[in-house]
Length: 303
Image (tube, rainbow, N blue to C red):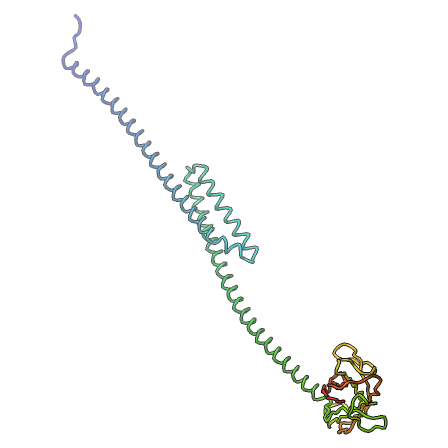
């Protein structure tokens, strides 16, 4: 006689099968949920890395802009060491910018490294900015000091010019004080016997007469007085020795040596023997000595 399953056993078997199916389904669901959770975590991590990378890129852009803002000032730095360090830091910024732009940085460790480098470069930037400001202030101080020195030099130059001009005026006054003076100058025609000839066409001699007043400033000693007589036609009369005057030698009509002791010498005469036909008109008398023109006078001689 065959054994038959009781209804209770059948129910138990069905329940066991259903339980196995349920457990299998549950395991499958758990695995699926775990996979979804892991995928969500990865996506969240990627989003976090992307966000940090974007933030890092923005910080680099800002840092690079700050470097560029001080580019012109850095180029004017006289200190080559500061400029070299500035240039190296700027090159490092550009290198890291290229790394961010050309390669996807997906490593949290690398992002941390870059953040640390940003912090270091920001510190360098602040240091260089402080040095630039210090140098600018120092240069401003030097400019102000140079301006003050320049003003002092201008004042000193003005004083030197003023003193030089004063000395020149004093020297000129001293020179003029040393110059001999002449007074009582006259021009007279003479006959052969030395008497006055009023008709110039008949004169045998022309006499120039003058007085040298007292002058204690004039150096004493022998003086050579040079006479120049110029006819109404503008011709120099006679042919005496030449003498230096204002950088060149000029001819004289006659000359006379005197001994000057500082006292007045009255009635000094210089004669010129007529050797050409004289005409009525204005004659010019000029007297020179020691490189000075003592006088220039005109006299009218009549026929």
